[in-house]
Image 1 (cartoon, helix red, strand yellow):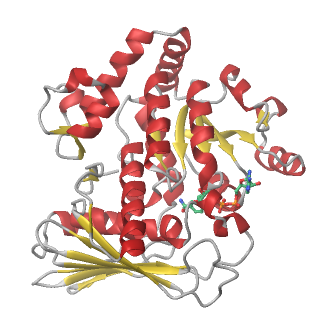
Image 2 (image 1 turned 90 degrees about the vertical axis):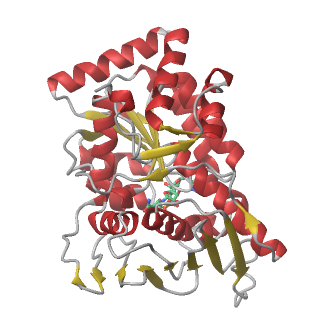
Length: 412
Ligand code: NAD
């Protein structure tokens, strides 16, 4: 079977985004397309640009697939998530490894190069970053910076000819997401958003039960993610750097969870801010929010997020029963049960699976199940939720990117 047309029901993308990504030549294509066509379109643009760099990279990717060479990842931004999760996960990955670092803090260099055996030649700062283009040890750049900086570094990574993973939220505006997607498409590199839970078996079971309607159609979803956020990363309270408060940071998992459990993108949203109990801390961003996602069949997802309260739940209800995860979005210790009993699923290293899955896409020229378009979708929904809370109105969302991960019935 032609690989490009083998996954039509797994990952869907709207005609609007396909056209945006591929240009007017695709206008004659049918309304709902699979990502495979997007990829064929981006390969075409590579051919026409046909830069030596693109050909070199493709040859290197192919050689790595043949020789079993692990792809090299460079982490950009050595903060909490890189240090606490990604670097340790890269000690467990099978298809990729920690090969380089990009940091603006010289004090961190010795500790990282020593601990992870990283050669000096693979250490960059934000000024020397673009020289990474000449480094054949590095295949993938993983952007783990404050949200407002994602766009610049993804674009520079693409221009350096590297495949890119970018942390969530993809950017602080849909316009930035599109600039990033354009840069990656133009450079012919793969681009994924760091949505680890798509590779986590409890969450995949929620996708499977919901999308296969194992207990009948899902009528109601409860998605709640809140944490008491301290001041150790002050940028999270800075609107310009973070783009918002808990909504784009942890509330985005509620949006994700609701969509992959229902298997649909909401058609409208409504929202209400929580009252601020600390005016100083939450001067620029919301302290918490309740928001509702409305689906086309009349079902709803009631969501809640906060920087001042703790909750961690993804629950789906049908006429015949229910299934839920609590906690649902943590790095480990997830637990699932249904109205028929415990899920009994093992926890795994989510980040290791996520990065290996992306490396596999590069080595075998496959589509990622967490493409940048999915990051765009959620940034569009975040924007609509803020508009709903600001206006007190229900905001239609039919125009957001129609991307859904429907791969949960298959092995990862
Ligand atoms: P952090 O503050 O701990 O790390 C940010 C890094 O960026 C630091 O090393 C810091 O030195 C560097 N930096 C460069 N310029 C900066 C500036 N102007 N202001 C502040 N820091 C600057 O943050 P984090 O928790 O590691 O989050 C980084 C990214 O990772 C965010 O986009 C966040 O949403 C994402 N994240 C994702 C997950 C997940 O589960 N997928 C978890 C945590 C964080």
